[in-house]
Image (cartoon, rainbow, N blue to C red; front, side, top):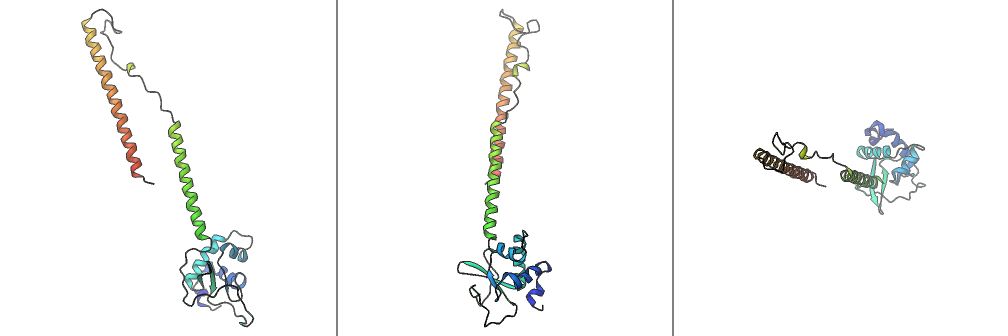
Length: 208
């Protein structure tokens, strides 16, 4: 087989090229570009659609075939079909253009498969975000330790729990106790505010 397009084609794509010559195209070397049907004709019983898509691109690049658009569909035309009697050969495929172009929007169903993959990935990502949101809503924080457990005594050493009667040292300890509680509550409020600011920055850095 001394056809330049075939000889230039990658070795992996040559079985598909032979199948296009002998099985998948009409006598004039043409067929509609439907990868699933071409794969079934050349590789019956095998899941070879993606393989055929890759091979068609390789064969178009090597000059073995032309991919063109007519009548709202994509078609294949072999540059050098097998020798046939032109008087008897016929084809239902439209004539390829004189100026062949190897550029095409999508190989058969490849464009639709790509869009379906993008939609599936988007749905998967949306599901991950929904799971994360549910987790955030249901996640329970550990109970916060009461400040009073760590606060200094409310009374003096002689009256650690305080007393109703006047006691100068108890008054001093009580003021220190109240000041400590106020400072700790303020510290917790500032900490929660800082954490909320960090969360907002994370969301701003990851736009959808």
